Length: 117
Image (tube, rainbow, N blue to C red; front, side, top):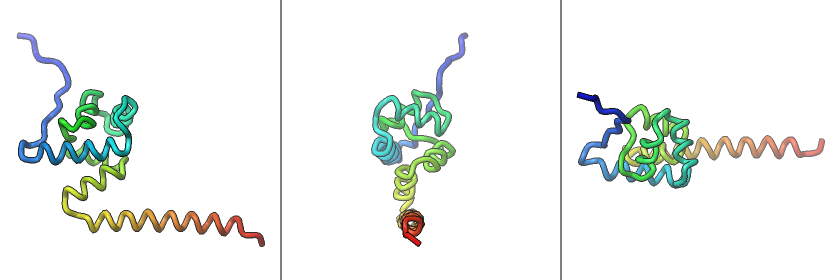
């Protein structure tokens, strides 16, 4: 008997399939778009196959734990979606405050460098 070949892409559990996969797909599509370049970016971030990346973009499958961590490490939209699914909106607010603080610090440094002495 010949063994089956190909990439194995797991489904989310049946009770979470729609919520998980659709939420991650919306976050990825919003940040990366839907084209071939988006799939290639996901492949580069996570090391998955092109087919798995396309499944995630389409919302028909969702990433496993480690792949979700890698996506959240590289994508703010996926991190926000993950925190929202976990009902941890307070962390999302703290992330936005930290980003705003660093942006203000950079702007202040630029203004200081432009000020004549």
